[in-house]
Image (cartoon, rainbow over all chains, first blue to last red; front, top):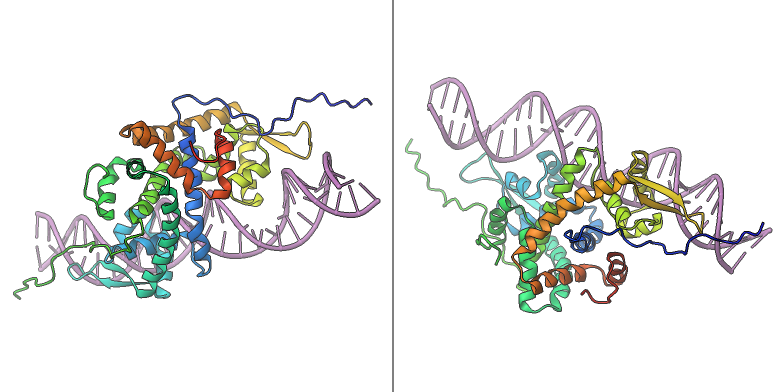
Length: 175
Length: 175
DNA sequence: GGAAATAAGTCAATATGACTGACGTAAATT
DNA sequence: AATTTACGTCAGTCATATTGACTTATTTCC
C-alpha cells in the first residue's frame, strides 16, 4: 500500500468554537483557574493535619468571627447542618474550635477558635494572602479597587449586605 | 423572680479578631463568596440533567476546545484519569460528547461536543456570563481590565502560558 | 401557663467527586 | 524488538456533600 497520509493538517487542539460575542468566556475561565490555584496552597498544608477544604472554611470564618453561631456558619458556607457536623466535631475534638452556650440565649452554641485554631487559620491565610498580594502587585490602586468591586458584585445581590457586614464594610455597594 | 437581664449587650457575631495588617482578608473572603455564587447558577441547571459540577467543567472545556485530548483535559482540570473517567463516560453515553481516534496518532481519543453538548454548554455559559456582565457593569474599561489581570495573576506562574494559550491570548502577561 | 417556634445535635442512607495503585491494550517512538 | 505513550479499566478508599426524620433544650408567643 502506498500509505500516503492525506489526513488534514495536525492542528490539535483545534481552534475554539466561536462564542457569542456577548459572552465573556475569558473571565469565566480565568475565574475557574484562579480559584483552582487559590485553593491549592492551603489544601496542601491542610493535608498534613488530615484536614480538608471544608475544615479550612469552617476554621477561617470562626477564627475571623469569634462567637459565630452554627446557623450563621451554615448560611455563610451554604451547606447543610449535617455536612457541617462531622467537620466541626473534628475541629472541636482536636482543639481548634470550642463551643460555648450563648450568654443570652442558651440554646445557641457560640463558636470560638482556640489558640491552636487561630494559629492554623493564620498560617493558611498567609498562604492565600501571598498569592493575592503578588496578583495585585502590578495593579495601580484603582485597579485593586476594581478587582474588589468585581468580586463583590459577583455575589448574589441579596447576600451582599450580609457579606459586607461580615467582612467589615457596611456599604451597600462595594468600596 | 425579678429576672432582670444583666447580661452584656447582645452584639453577636462579635467583632472580628484583628488581623495582621498585611493580610488582605477582604479579598480572601470575597473570592470565596464570589466563587460560591458563581457556581451556584450552573449547579442548579445541571441538577435537572442529573449532572454535577464535574460534568460542567468537562463539557465546557471540550465544547470550547473541540478535539481536546484526554491528557489535556486532565491537566486543565488538575484531576486524575480515574476521576475523569466516570464523568466523561456519562457524557459520552448520554450523547453530549463524542470521541474520535486521532487522525495522526490513533492512540489518542479526541473529544468533541455534540450539538446537544454545545447547546448545554452554551446555556450554562450564558448563566455565568450574565453574572459577570452585571459584576463588570459598574466598572470603567480600565477596571474591567484590572479584574482580568488580577484573576490571571492568581494563576500559578508556570501555568499561565498554558491558560493564556487555551483562552486565546498568547501573551506572557495578561492583556 | 401551655403551645409553637427555634437552635442545635443526631441517625441513617445516599450521591458525588476525588484519590491511589495496579494492570491491560494499542500504537508510536527509539 | 524494546520501550514509551495514550488511554481505559478494575478495585478499593476517602472527603464532602445531600435528604429526611427525630430528639432535646430553650425561648417566644398567645
